[in-house]
Length: 217
Image (cartoon, rainbow, N blue to C red; front, side, top):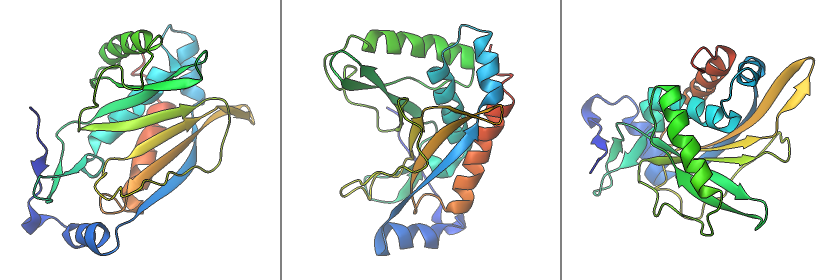
């Protein structure tokens, strides 16, 4: 069983910040940005790859680059980080007007991840329960999609969510503007895990992947 790796407090530069936002002033924050996905959309149109899977992979790739977005707590409540984080995501059932929550093992190779995740999506399309794969693994972070509307702001209110340190992503409907394609992306972050600097860097990582989608194959 995979376990989070404890962080060495003696050398951790965010030790004081973590303690402050975890114990003294526990809080989360949300940011919504428009990501330019023009190049990604153009590449996907020339392939049989699914847009949703490509978006999930790009987010997962960025998350797995940065320890602050793989944060966890040990059983004793000490800060730790998962060695790898897997994306959990929603699958909508239009007939039932409900969704299922599933997950897929992250792989740095997009083609491998796409094949695995396409099967997960296909299997979940006819699911009649919210969690058809059972309980999500503890090192899974959430990605959801609202493809029916373009939004400029989105936030979640998580009751007693101070132990939920992994980020939460929400994708919105693409919009065309000035011959470019933009995707709204909302990110919910626990402040003990990451500051604005870290989240801005994560956003830049995602934007870079969308702008140079040579990984799509």
